[in-house]
Image 1 (tube, rainbow, N blue to C red):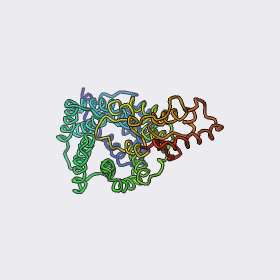
Image 2 (image 1 turned 90 degrees about the vertical axis):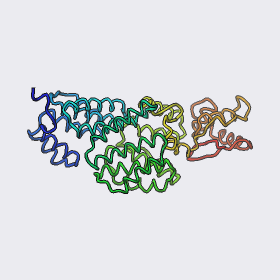
Image 3 (image 1 turned 120 degrees about the vertical axis):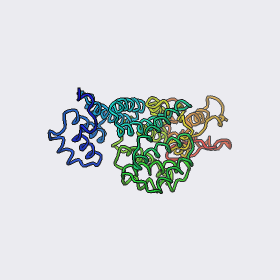
Image 4 (image 1 turned 45 degrees about the vertical axis):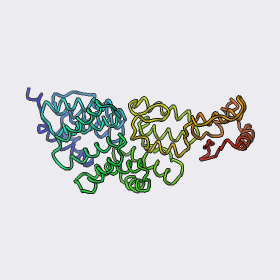
Length: 400
């Protein structure tokens, strides 16, 4: 019966192993895994953490699902690790559910340290789910306040500041969020290097949304060289978008280490489809984002929260020429090639490649023999005083 209420203090060797993991002392950690100081379930938890760190999420989940334990502390730890995996794979609802389950176990053994981290992570889950309305805001505020009550040190309060600033940003209160971050950034609150980099990432993000691009880019350049954590995908996405935005160059390809079908992979892929003049593929990729997080992503490449109106995705999409097509009226005679060309560009709302336009105008699979006809059509349409078609990044687009 004693085993059923085992607490954190009853797992001294496991706690040492977690500390080694957090400090990334992999050599010492592997030695512990080879030894007999951890029981089989404790080893599964550590291995799942390592698999998660390597981006092998399916293997990490499979490892966690094997075996059981009667220790409520280890059960809570299992749900903590699960929440981290779900968060990294953009499954925020599952992450929130896992944190709730961790909290239930920590409450039974009165583990204040575990309750702090679980309530903190829960508040972040609610923020990322973009829940809206009074009740949803109360959910966030409750989780945040509970985490604050369990925070025992200045170091523990830094992530809470970051969580609050992120929530304010989503509400569109960008200057208020930035002031909060800069106040703590300048006060030299003690924090780990990793937490400091994540803290700086949020500052850079908000500066970008405020259109203070040069300041934002300077921070991203530093983060890009240093970041090697679970937030690496976000930092790489935002860095490369900011770089392309500031330098007015093409967005580079997605790094190979990105998890396919993750949130930032899909955001990046959508922009690349637009950049390549393939809006139909962009729509398909965006639809995957909607399925991944329907509480955040809406139809027609829109976001639910007002604070996302100036996010990296929206601003770069605007720079590429994505247009509000309602303001355009087709000036050409119906069912003519000029009409179909204009209609295709307007409905796309962004630049299209020559090959795509030939297929849409002549209703055929792309044939290079049609290139000369296409160029003559473009020239004819350009001669209309009502239409301004430009060639940008190898795609054609209409500008007002």
